Image (cartoon, rainbow, N blue to C red):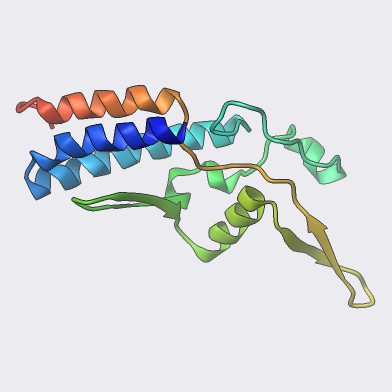
Length: 155
């Protein structure tokens, strides 16, 4: 997969090099929006970028109402900001609270979940659930956007 991404990056880089900086920024923003949309759909479906299902949550009274779906706020486009420039693209959480939740789940970290009446802190280790990534279906998306960049009438 890493070699495929490197090849894709070289190919896309050759296309981008022939475009004006404003056009490159416009293209990277369009690509960022499409990739954000694809990742949000995967997060909503509880599917990792590689296509496997995310590890299910532990059972609990409150969670039964949600039907097992996770990441209610992370499924919103406003939760992820896009930093697009003529030279690159970054999709990142839009606030520190969203960043913390995303990091805990993405990297499988330990986090505080509550406190007992006597003041002791309750911490739990979350399983790793990859939220953002580049799936095989995203290649077709990149190719489609690259083709639209080559079209002088596109935008």
